[in-house]
Length: 91
Image (tube, rainbow, N blue to C red; front, top):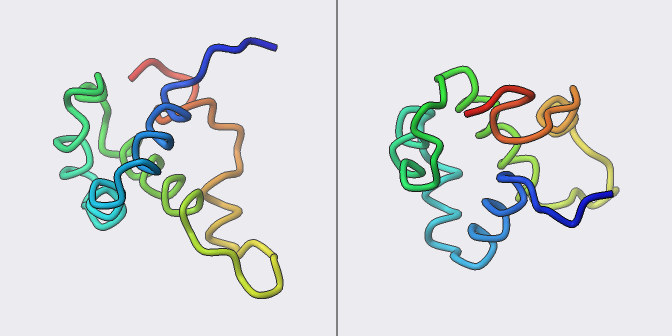
């Protein structure tokens, strides 16, 4: 197993350390999300991939339910084997 972090892991760490940026990312439209992370080399991301990233971020930062179970939306966002913010394709 590699110790190298994925772009998604680095992005999650950055958002976790900056609550204002995290809130902005979670509330952004897919277009705004692309603009927000241009400096993170995500400017080549398509709208579909930005939507997938947004769902995954919301699932990552969503508060846990009282039962500890994931909602259908949360399962959909993290399911499917996406390897990073752009799936299995380079951003």
